[in-house]
Length: 598
Image (cartoon, rainbow, N blue to C red; front, side, top):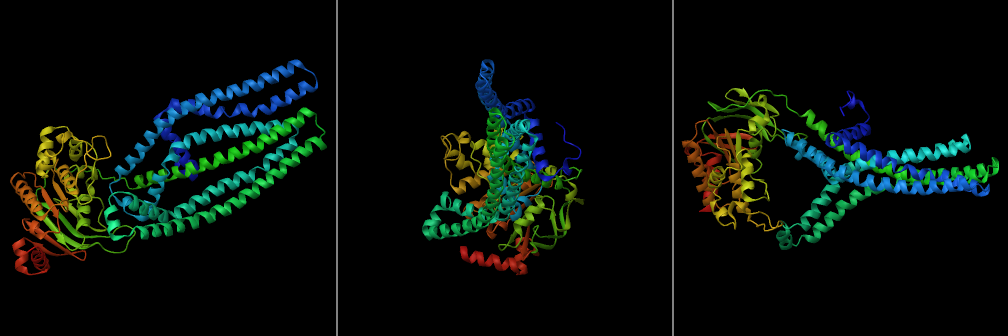
């Protein structure tokens, strides 16, 4: 099913539905068609019951045996056929939905992974949308069944209206009185969706506070600080703020819905009076009007409910479309290639950066040369811009002003995926992959993750030999206590494995180490980086640059070059001895820390 050329010109809801159906068709085209036909047609036999009742009543009154038998067979056949279609269609649709769900969830994951920037993970307005997308992921799974049910229910509704028109064309007016219920239903879903997105920050805060109070990590601190009651009260305030906005919209929409249904109920009663008293129709037609009109009321309620659910599903799908559009708008067009080695170095010229949606400069007018083959340490107080500098070097963000070049080539012209294939390292907010230990480490280089020598080397580089030796099955040990035979690790052990994962690549051009050993003692950290820096200098034939961010000055003194950041600016650059002789900020901070440790 190819995308229509003017897909982007479709109204928002139709485009979301169309895109969801595209994904489903690409996943399972045959199952989609078969399940759609079975589920949609399963609603139709029930609509014919009103016709069989009319024929049955006519046959009884006129003592027409064959008509009675035919009507009875029709009633039985409708019931049996509807059951068969629902049973078979339900099972086929469930099989289709399970397979389509895998494709849709994988598509969402790929969209996230395809983005070169991590902006969508850090901006509040994007986080609110992503939170709703995650919370309402089940609606993406149900959009197909909702569409099938809605199509079948509309067909059944059309049959009911057709039966009424067979009595008198005037009764078609009854369907017109149903229009307000459909309009109100569609309006209601849109209004409530808008309010939900507006109130999403309060809901996300309430969820965060709930997680704080129920997961193991913060448990000790909450008990020591006796802040549990305060968290509960704060969560209640956030929840009430969310509920106040959403409940107001729900009350208003419920009032309009009640008025629309009251109007239809009055029209239905008038239609029965019209058939019986004005048309003086035969008993069979009166029974048909009662049954078809009653069905119309019941079918309308079901159809409106299904349409509402479909609209909710489409709204969830619209967030998927937003993510697709966002990914498409941020898809890089750079067509260059990453260098195989660094001959001169990486240079930052007039680089300034502020996070999107903010006005505060995190880095300002940074001019910096990182020589090829060097070990560079970045130091400074909290908030000075150290981590942001690493993010720019890894191309998680682009500079707001200025440029970064590698051997004179602008880094922005190098495709992010190719540049990152030349990167290695570890970050302070590392991930705890609860896999077998060999996979947890091996993910650092997926092309070599099954090579035992590469794993052993990475473990040694990351200083995790003692961790692996202490595991019951070594690298084959399952990590994480929530899994069968899984082993829990300390924070420091997890950090050593994360560091080993960062050292899986053999020949990176840039090694970024953003405080990856914060959980280790100062002596262990110092020994680890002294060893790694020495190895980096002696076996560095590619011009590899190592960038180390650390708050421990005793560790960074071994670096070739130390960059001191203060208030978003580079204030000092030099070796340890040069900076100490200059007696500036670095010497002051070094002295303070030395006295604290001494």
